[in-house]
Image (spheres, rainbow, N blue to C red):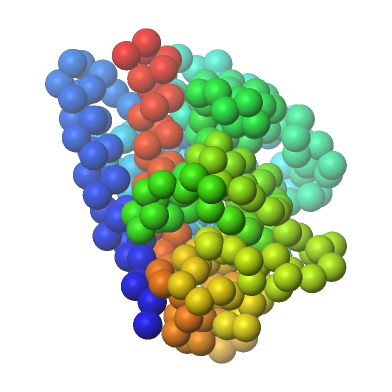
Length: 286
Ligand code: NAD
């Protein structure tokens, strides 16, 4: 039976480190401030934002939520993002996704790139994405950092390991593949158009699944002893929260596995806090 990678416990350690850093900053007269922007009233987004608020407040980070109605204009959103980006009293800015298509249409990238890259704690601006490609310092998407941290907790050296990432979104799959590649793993990035995902996953020492598809990764797709990281969060019709992995059966074959909930979710929030403090330090040249 696989070792369970306890994301909640790992995240608690990261959060304690961040809180200690924030205390140090406060002792020097500083304040770390974070602004989240929420457009519309999607219930899942409201829960995600509330969780971020709770974590910030626990760590001593000042949190402000800016809400816009789903009926707002594109210009209302860009004006708000520009204002927060220019505000010297704001260290981190995050636009909660998804933004209603009626507001952004196909211009989401334009909005995201209005965020000052030094405040872009979701790591979605072109500047931060390019830094990750080049292996340079920058703000890296929080979930990707959480995945790397979870893997490193059971496998500190990824040199030469075969890693398969299923899902290539700009917020999870793609940055995760880049981070792992920067740690000298050999990475294959699978997606919806991959002909035979199992052909890749069966060869992998580490499999990361971030597809949004319940039970996408089954036991026959996994090599014995593999490390399995489940990023997926899916709500079944009966209300149950599940990941992308057939947990029960894959856990019998893997050497280590993350549960859902209690795996990558808490780590994502922990690394958001870490990014906010890193942004503060960078802006204050600390
Ligand atoms: P997305 O829809 O933007 O991207 C999904 C990716 O998976 C795409 O690249 C798609 O090609 C691929 N994919 C989908 N079905 C596939 C299949 N059958 N075979 C192979 N590839 C397939 O989603 P996202 O934003 O990257 O999120 C993915 C999942 O992770 C979702 O369940 C989401 O809720 C969850 N998520 C969790 C956290 C967390 O903190 N744990 C954070 C972000 C997203």
